[in-house]
Amino acid sequence: MAPTPVWRRTPRFGGAWRLGVAALLFAVAACSGAVSPDRGDARPGQAAIASPHPLATRAGQEVLEAGGNAFDAAVAVSAALAVVEPFGSGIGGGGFFLLHRAEDGHQVMVDARETAPGEATRDMYLDDDGQPIPRLSQDGALAAGIPGLPAALVHISERYGRLPLADVLAPAIRHAEDGFEAYERMILGLRFKEDLMRESDAVSAVFFPEGRMPEPGDLIRQTDLAQTLRTLARDGHDGFYRGPLAETLVEGVRAKGGIWSLEDFAEYRVIERAPDVIEYGDARIVAASLPSSGGVVLSIVLNILDGFDLDALSEPERHHLVIEAMRRGYRDRALYLGDPDFTDIPHARLTHPLYAAGLRAAIRRDRAMPSDLLPGIAAGDESPQTTHYSVIDADGNRVATTQTLNFWYGAGVMAPGTGVMLNNEMDDFSTKPGVPDGFDLVTAEANAIAPGKRMLSSMTPTFVESPRGVAILGTPGGSRIITMVLLGTLAFLDGRDADEIVAMRRYHHQYLPDRVSHERGAFSEEIATALEAKGHELAESGRDFGNLQLVMWEYNGNRVSAASDPRNESGDAQVY
Ligand code: GLY
Image (cartoon, rainbow, N blue to C red; front, top):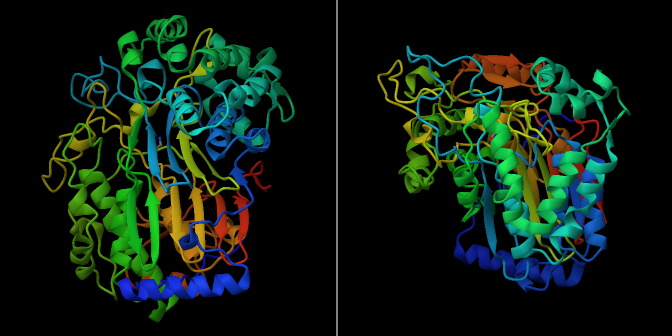
């Protein structure tokens, strides 16, 4: 695996500089075969898909070959992943879809995050003494929010796609009906959740065929799920959210102690939101906005780093500053962020360069700031499962999607007769908000449970746009998602190629616990010693971080490339 890269910060150009650079790029482009988006006629001419499973990548390819665009391909990949990666995401879950339409530059985030059911209450996971009841927000039907993924598939297909929904869902339906081969990672998840999943006959019938743990190569067939997808393909949004299928889902969930209702289903809508846009040097980073925390945290971190001359620093000094910026971004994530439709979030302040300048001023170059001198709260636990894919088509339409059921196989239960695994996304709310912490701060109110509200997420589908070209990236990984996207972004801006970026060793700081968790090999001995001398506690993790999926379009040579994280044995990145 590649070591952590040493990145160089690209310089920030003012207006005149920017014009000059654009003119220079244009001139170079004209003589060298490079393309320039400033000419308006630039298109990659090739498509690419990076996804964590070959059947999902192929589903997207099939749809592109049938005349679909990147948005059609994205719907096909999403639905296929919901079938062949049932531990990471599903029709019973949600996600964020970041879209770029080439013809007019329209950029939007389709927010398909789950919502809290109408009967949800702020203290629903607490006992009579006000203490969280272990696992109630993670296991079983009460942990499930109202799914958003089906609504997103229909919305994106109808509003942005070229092909009929039935055509783009066809590969997923085929894989559900005919089955896909079990593989190590999905079996690992089954082992982890086995006791809970075996309690449900519907789940056991699918995932423990003939009553036993599947082996690699065994066929996993999901005939009920195939029927659910057919209903969605035929009847669109209302096929899932109203009528017989919705009734079966709601009845099944309530029979298992859940609180879904038909009203919740009738009210569910995706929301089109403006993504967060961050100016960093001469790059523009477009990232998922609230209720994803990704865009805001990336804004804080990159705005802090934008004020340092990283080029002039040694490698340990750069890592030190990145870690200090991460610390501050995650502190603010836990303190301030939640569903913007329910809480006043100080978004403009948090994302303002002057706010970052204030944070930067308090960073010492020689010492780590202990987190307990920086009042705030710790983020809750988040699942490292979830999934991501990236797509570009030959016209330059792009999609970055991160979607999830939350922890392995979500809540571990299924609504019988539907094949729909329930998410356990309710766990992403603060289950015990408003309790003063050690600093007497009343915290995490912004992410308290309320009916109809969307729980805060770390999923960060992202576009990086720079004079070099465009990167489309994202990863699963719970709270580490944002720092992985950050390191990937910096590496792209440093000129690294796609294979290097997905392979590089990763590190992470999230304010509390106050330590730098890192993969083996993320730091050389010399760098580790230098960071420790500044007061950083380094903690090597026994686990790999993430499953990054990256597509790049470089203007020089008009080159499209794609790479899938080598940590995942089944990832599949293709250029067509
Ligand atoms: N459930 C993982 C996330 O939304 O970040």
